[in-house]
Image (cartoon, rainbow, N blue to C red; front, side, top):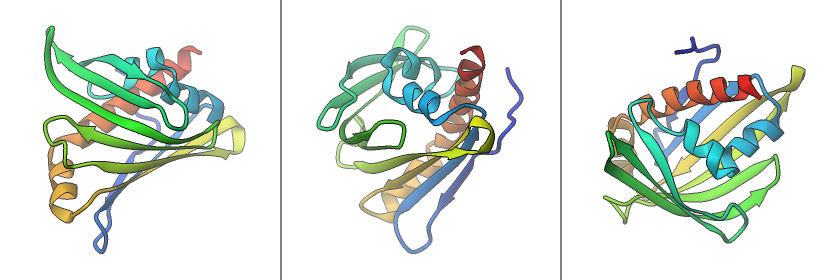
Length: 161
């Protein structure tokens, strides 16, 4: 397991039901963006280390749809789906993100890929949900483990490229 070089910040706004996740990567915006739109790459890094990801649908263009399932020891334990609302190459992705177990709890997420000095990238994800209850349930679900371990795996993947 790789030591984390960059801290991941996960912040909940007190006034609106949002979660903002910010993380820097030692890779270009093109590389980090590609890891979000290439289904083979996405499946390798998304989520906690204890799970594997199976992409079941992946159309990474404006108007496209996506879906994936998480497995542990060959058994499906969770699945997620959504739509790509905007895909602006190497700059921004806007998509919906829904946990199949709570299909009414849709998050609208905007991912921005900011170029930093030295060929690095700041990834900022803003998730907007309908209410504080949904937001707080997301935060207490263990999402921080999945986010942090996923970004560690993404670091490892980017190092290899």
